[in-house]
Image (cartoon, rainbow, N blue to C red; front, side):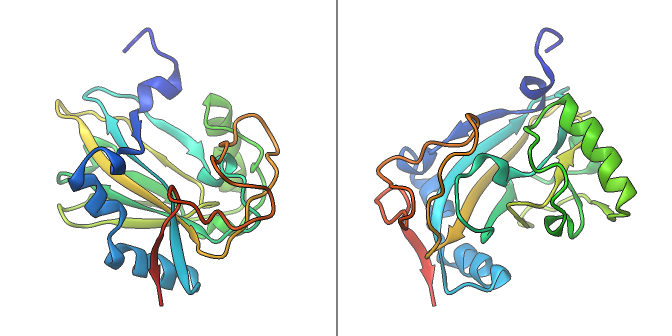
Length: 207
């Protein structure tokens, strides 16, 4: 752990496991979770953008301030993530924490997750008086946040890993944008300006 950089201390990521695990597939294609995402965003339906399991190891470091949509080449902001802890997650385990309503703030949107984003966004969000929201999670509780909501997590100070499943949703009518930097995803089987209507981005819920 001491030999890793800040990003690698924060968590281990395993992406796209919906195609490899039936249990993960149930999470990713859950109409119930998709319906909640659509209703929160005020859209008719949602597609899968991607999914990933996140493991903050025992003794793992903090997750710096960041906004997920920095990495997504999409033409609007109708995106959100459901964060699903796979065990009770007390504060000592480093649950997700937010700057409430910060999806409305455009400062710092050019920052990838890093020590720099932690320092700069901490200053900017404090100056804007965004409320810091952090709480423990019981098993079965989940959390949703917009793609541009700034969030972070404290270190895992326990002897057990913090396991989380996430599903990222996008408006079912959203369109692909040109990549604006090299850290953005390269969406397979899609074209700029088109709806990503592909097997990799199925509609999960539509009213």
